Length: 334
Image (cartoon, rainbow, N blue to C red; front, side):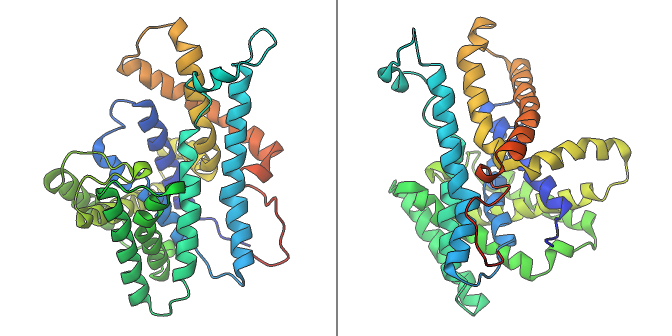
């Protein structure tokens, strides 16, 4: 039976909330430095739980179930929702598909394609026996991806982003080898150390610009990109460990829903954009012409509340399409 680490769900919960807040532009939760670890953390977590597979077929089956099937499902789900608002007077207006903001794309699910590519890259690297050479090669490949971005060279299916992110996947695998999953010593000290280091690097040494991995736009040096991403993820990791062990009742009550959201973060990733666009283009204009900071927080809260019944419905009735149960079966242990 697989062990579920509570602090990992907390980490994923924090990050999916930051992703949602960034898309809605919630004041206070879109600070530029948060972008330095927001997406690198997800690649790191995937590497953290990477295991050796008995065959490429087994590996491909698992990644298809967990990434590719959800990608196509959420894409199709977006189309279906969009079409229902484009049909007028019993007739389908094909031109309206490209006129409305909602149908294309379900932007956040780009990450599923990118993570699939990164996983394929790392699977290839996993055959290298020397951890040292594997580390250096992952670093070099990420530099290649970084260089492509600097020269505005974009590859299809977000492959350039996948190259840039490979080091964080490798970093997660390295952390697993160090035993960090079960590390329980001096958690507060490590959290303060990594958080202080991250704040110094991100606010004193780096330019105040957003990291946009979806476009492979990294507006600072490669060294700072790697440092801020790794130290930022370690800061969140130890924060989650500290919070996960708290005995303070109010904090435990706050963390419980965050942990739940983290456990099913892929469902939120695939659906919050649909809610956001629907509300933004079909509801809010009838209530208020322009949203201020307070309104954006309310907007964020509404979408967050909608996430809970959405998670329940999808994990209960559609688990094969949102990475909760395998759609493609295999006789091998994954």
